[in-house]
Length: 593
Image 1 (tube, rainbow, N blue to C red):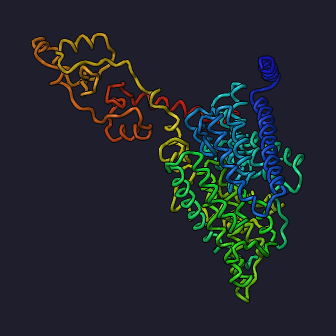
Image 2 (image 1 turned 90 degrees about the horizontal axis):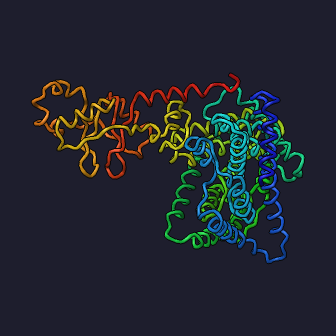
Image 3 (image 1 turned 135 degrees about the vertical axis):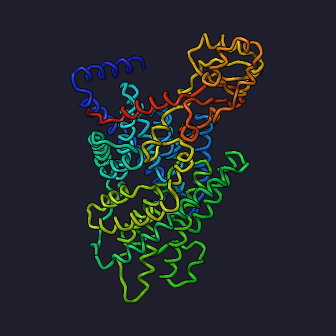
């Protein structure tokens, strides 16, 4: 290990002396893209072989229904045994690291998601690999940046490079990888970010293109071109996709929360989740696993029959049975995904969103085609539906547009993709300002949003702004005692605390100036008679947005801060806070400057 460390330090030091800092960043972006791309290929290959093994194992017809339970139990065991019983998952973890942890992601995230998600998804969990791949690629970028001594801005960029390469590799869609990184991870983007992102994304795509077989890649061949006469139906699909996205998000969070809040232990939750999944998969087999195989069938317009294990759908004629079957799949996919995550599995909602959108588009077009005088292409609507639900669930309309455009090997559907994605995103955004994965953290100020001022405040830690070198005095002390404090202090505000260090009030120098020149008051005037309540009181657990709001409301320059026991912790200065704000703002310039 020591030899490896010495070797890479020598190589990086040699490169630094031979190239400019920006050229060095390009080299590291290429390395990040390669490692992240290879990790994505490894994860896809692991899942492919696990699922191939399940399909060809010599067991009874319905024995595969037991594998999701086994996958959840094994994932829970690994997390409890090797990772302390809990792991931070998905895109929210990456965003929180950027905003609150100076873009440092622990090294374990570069491998734990590969292990846990491959087991969860490979053995039939109804979630996707994209969020684990983003988390892993981001961790790769963060840790490569760490060993090369990059600053915060450069670390953040390499996190985005790793994520872009991961998405690019798993879909063979380099443009979508770049746009995903910009749209989801980088709330502040400058021109100089594009070149490293493009390099990483292209390298990631090449990894999958060269190593993975064509059958493993997620792509389609359009059978029908875009017909402008179908625009009204695409508008209707966009509206439907928006409300289905809302349904998806709210249903997923509700079911996941119910499992998480259960008093059952982790293994019991896994057994319960696995049992429910077994029932769902028995009735609706396409929900098994991430579902890309069935998505290909639907999006290629080849979905003609399904396994009716319960014979319930045989009561309808063939066409209406297919419509009813796909409608139930659309409604149950978020439930299956939530049970998988709530039961202890590791995965994300990227693939389930695409799956839901594909079946939604097929359901919609199939339903419209029951009208005798209308005939719209079911395959095209399935593809466009994927973009609509992905846009609405993940809040990434541009990623959705370019992803589907790239995996169809052309831009024939660009207009309907734009229509459906934008309408879906507009509807969801009207009801929920933040995506389901980031809502809680965004409201708590734990991650960056697209509001620049709020992001800067989020990056400021209250503890760093705390000024502790303030003198305090007891309420029973006299004016002469305060004068002694003033003599050895450069401050003009003093905290009054009791003998248990509990805060009682403040004394400001401006309020007592006259008394300072009245010696007869020195022994008669008590601190208690001179103290006053501050305009506002802050606590150590409050975020900087609240702090700034209280400064604005009170027009104060200093406010006291108390800890959880109501003891005086220090003052915060508006001047110091503004100086820190300007410092961060100045550091967010273009990397080329």
